[in-house]
Image (tube, rainbow, N blue to C red; front, top):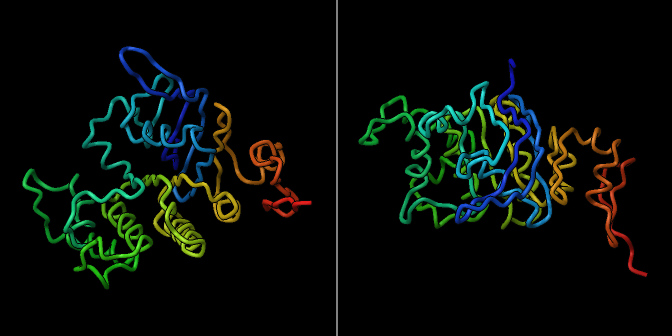
Length: 262
């Protein structure tokens, strides 16, 4: 399908140990196109990380099909996958004592020779990625001297330098204060629109996502539901997912409300 970056059909996810398969979630169906930002949300243990790890080919699907730009994931080698998707995991920095420029340059690994030598064209891509994420001003600083928010921007710059149509981020705002969480999600939205990327972000900040994303992927009690905020509001899926003793979803105003304590 033209314009479809990721196509998930009847996917079953889980893990295998000692020859036994444990299913975490099944019947997962979703389509993501270029220029779209999707928030993957669910309570702890719902399977968000397992789904991302399966989409990133770290875990083997227990059933169903994943297609990147029309190609089945099972037919793609790891070097081929590295040119189709980039992954930003929470708090993951490859090695210590690395400058921002060196970190972002790792995004060019799928395109370099076996020695990892960068061409002038690679260096230009790295500089452009840093400029887009506004991190070029501390390009020579050690990555561990930066704040959590600055490091996250550097990791996204590395993903940009990888030049893939799909970027996946696992709870990138986990350690950020609230204004920084909003800025990061706004940045990812602009990235999707201006760069034509398909972006998946796993998050617990549903109140922010409700106002910025194109689609929501809800994982709730082994069930998976995908759709726009309006679609999931009208269907009652958001109320089913959010409503609890102390909190509820107000579909009319598209906001999460905390119930007053009597």
